Image 1 (tube, helix red, strand yellow):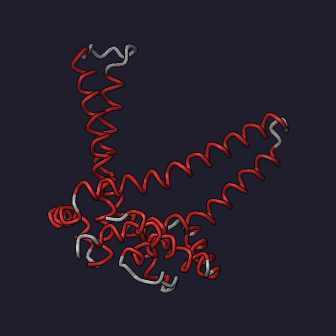
Image 2 (tube, helix red, strand yellow; image 1 turned 90 degrees about the vertical axis):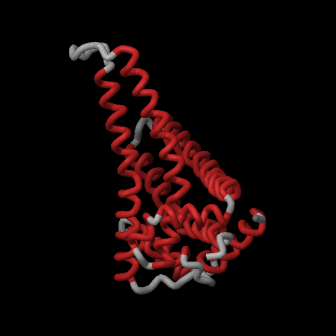
Length: 238
């Protein structure tokens, strides 16, 4: 698995399909503004391995596919929400201010256990979701997003180590710069609040600029990541 080659391919795909086509870029920005629903549908087209970058057409299909992606995501994160509720419940039970008995060490133990389970499941779900999305995109069958046996086989053919490294690598490659930019803008916003004595116009202007920048960048980053994950999936031979 050549990461450099995949990154170059993903960049060329994004550059020729989005940056060099301002009309398509604008259409994707509109798709993001529509609560991101049709944009999710477009990303599915990228997951199907379409080359060059697919057109932004058939908006009805984009909306339908996008809604299915949202439902798939919700189903996957439900276990995390349930564990989070359990953790919060245990925190309340072990709170010194609650007069409902003293769970003591046992309560703290289970709280730590569920917290560990939460982070473990979060990692597993984050690793599986790309395969689930791509499998759904290529088969067109909603249920295939939950065909864990087939997904396990797919990742096995890619190689578990290769796959995990590839997913973590792209997450860090995209996440670190975006986090740095976000903190930079938060610093600028804080500085503006102090310098201009919390002037609402200045604050609104900075927030509007940040929102505009996000709208411009989201299509590029998302298509780049989707293409990269598609190339990773293709190593399974499917």
